[in-house]
Image 1 (cartoon, helix red, strand yellow):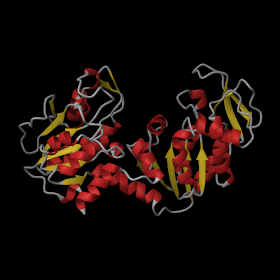
Image 2: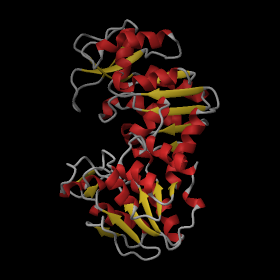
Image 3: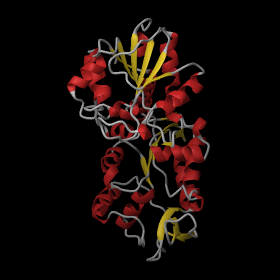
Amino acid sequence: MLKMSEVALGGKRVVIREDFNVPMEHGVISDDTRLRAAIPTIEAAVAAGGRVMLLSHLGRPTEGEFDPRFSLEPVAHALADLLNRPVRFEFDWMGGIEQRDGGIVMCENVRFLKGEKANEENLARRLAALADVFVNDAFATAHRAQASTYGIAQFAPIACAGPLLSAELDALATALRDPAHPVVAVVGGAKVSTKLALLESLTTKVDQLIVGGGIANTFLQAAGFEIGNSLCETDMVPTAKRLLDGGGIPMPTDLVCGKAFDAGTEARIVAAGSVNPDDMIMDVGPETANAFAEILDQAQTIVWNGPLGVFEFDQFAEGTKILAKAIADSTAYSIAGGGDTIAAIVKFNVADRISYISTGGGAFLEFLEGKTLPAVEILEQRAA
């Protein structure tokens, strides 16, 4: 791919697609991780004298309709504080805007535009007409072929990858294409079905695959353990059994259970074979967490997506905490991604000791699965 650092930006209209889809309530941003990740790209474009226009989506508004709950105006104010320079917010920008060299404009939510998600060609061409240089820096949306990620890259005079997108792809390649062994992957989450392709792909690439959350319950049942009233996908048990038969998936030896999915429910540590019919498995036990930590201590490459338990409730957080600390203490190259994973990293204060934290959720998973990311593919085609 052509990289932004290889393009002369001075005096050019530089349209940068970022991912500012941040959690927000009543106009207040609760986690600005994605904004901070984009700051180096914006600063580099400004320093080069570009006339910067920032594009992003926020939430899932009805296309073609303005909804103040999904306005990016609060993002413009937050960026101005982070950059310590003015960031002009533009509500009506599709007709073109006046801009000066080194200036920054935050454009209103691209999902207010009809045809964005469907990658409608006319909209893509109109977006491309606003740019002398299009920079895709939004790895988290790279798995979607939309007008502001794919279509604009087709028709803009120059289309290139921003530093954040490039860094994400480099980090993933380091972890997956030619990794140092042993490779250990940690995959948590509620359902096997949503991560089946990922699990199947990883079993061919890693030396050990640690499963957690609701996914682990399905594997426990496949291994013949009683799981009580726990979250489980019974129809996925044969698939889990097939993956277990391939080896390399360690099973928990102890578990932490509760009687209800509630912050006030009492936690009880039990052996893996001693779950009662009315128990809900909420976390791995200390023996299992420490065994997993030993596996991670031997790793040279670690990929992490998803917690081991219901870490939002403190009495069921210890397994994920031990896991996070083990990854942070490891000398392995570690890459982590996904919303719940980042929330755990923040909760347990280990961000500075993870080699790379991906801003992507769906894109991170699809890359791990070996899928082609459309917004990356179009940049490669434009560079050919």
